[in-house]
Amino acid sequence: MRPGPRIDYKQLRRINPEAARHAVIGYLKGNGGNIAGAARTFGINRSVVYDILRKQKEGNLRDRSKAPKHQPRKTPGEIENKVIEVKNRTRLGPKRLSRYLRQHEGLAVPAGTIRHILRRNRGKLTYRLPSHRVHRGKREFVDWYSAKPFEIVQMDVKFIRDQKALTREQIIHLDRYEIPGKSWLKMAELRRLIRGFGCRLIQNHKGHCEENAHLERSHRTDDEEFYIPRVFAIRSEEDLLNEALGYIYYYNNVREHSSLDYQTPFASLKQQLPEIDDIIRYVQPIILDDVAVKLGPWGGYNVRAHYRNDLFVNLRGL
Image 1 (spheres, one colour):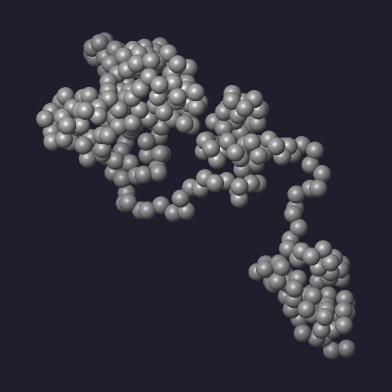
Image 2: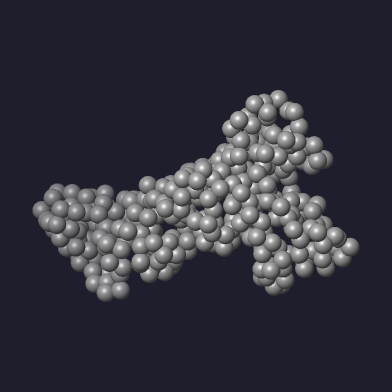
């Protein structure tokens, strides 16, 4: 018997598994359903041909799921749905989402389990990271670890009404007492403000939090150790500044930091600059918009003073 034409089934399957199975079924229809002939032509076992016919009878020629049919340790569907719902609402990462679920939903779901749930349910997530980022050019290199104290300062805006950190009740509380939360101060105006102090601003690229990593990490500490536990004690702008004053003193002079070999920031600073005045231990919190209005008669600032007191900036200074 002369060998007939050969078709590389495996090659077809790598391109499109469903189309490869359609090719086998089409061949069977043309040669009277000869299983052995189809197996020889496509270079596969007869058991594979029989499996393709079973899939045709089931009405689905796509690959079957590789997940086991019996999964006794799989997270229940109602918990998976709650994880997806809260993820879409808060956009928290796995670790913070795990804490949120434990605190506000009474669910103990480890961060690793949350990662698996999100991976399995990508299609149900409404939050998407941008598919591409606009290239803005390289940012000027900043050598944080060789800089002397106060030579380079990371600065960021902290929105008090952080929906990822605070509960709905806490945000309503801030609104009720009209606690400052959003600023009209724009980047161009901020450049003008700091230029008067002989400073220049190196702006991070939008969406690249890693360029401001030290301060981004401190925001999390602020949320966990100040805003979340203390927000209900704040009922006025004066309360905000008083509470912030105590927290800044605690952060700089009492709280030990693992990144500083378990020293306080002030103790670490004193080692590097023994001659520095101890008065720097007491850093005053300020409303940045107030400072912008009062420092100079720049065009528009005094007019905008009518809409002031919208931004609180925590200047640690250390």
